[in-house]
Length: 109
Length: 144
Image (cartoon, rainbow over the protein chains, first blue to last red):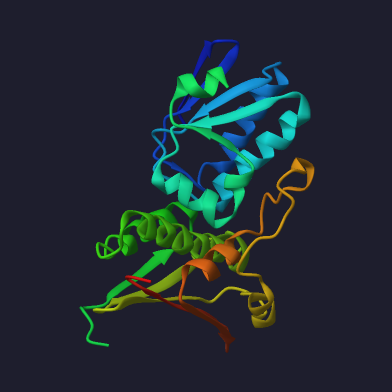
């Protein structure tokens, strides 16, 4: 699984360089994100602009990351594609996650 | 319905093959708009992953049999497996819409969302488990 980290504006921007966040890679994605949080990252922007498909396993991993951050951290998502928005809406998780059109907007929020 | 040639697939019950099978099935769905196509892809993947993880519990050598038939109005999908399946009452009892408190992150669901997705995306869906064969039949119209 390919991820790219960039520190910008006090945030860790994590770009997921995969076309799909699904059951195949959900566990490794979750572990990689938890490792970043456990290393002290509290403000995370997840750039999903290259992810065209997400299933409920992938979404469950993102929810796990949000829970692991807890109330003292922040997880914003940017670059949400139609395939990712589909599962957010189907599960009503679009009420939970703060999504932004651009990386800059997510960092500034 | 006046149907196109059906797509028949027999695929190994693995997560990677579930991914490939989903893409093959969704390849038939050019009559959906972008949003409906994304919804449909999610629902198909949900059931195939359910079969791999729960019905077969990642057993090696297991197979999933798929038939997809497109017609002028809809696509009908049948997915069969010979794993342990799930009790039909459990399938029937699953809600078609998730209900949770979006403000309480400690209680957000991390799993168990697949059946709700399938039920909300498909126009009709039936699940039977008989004589060791578990069969999901789902119909989705091109336009709602």
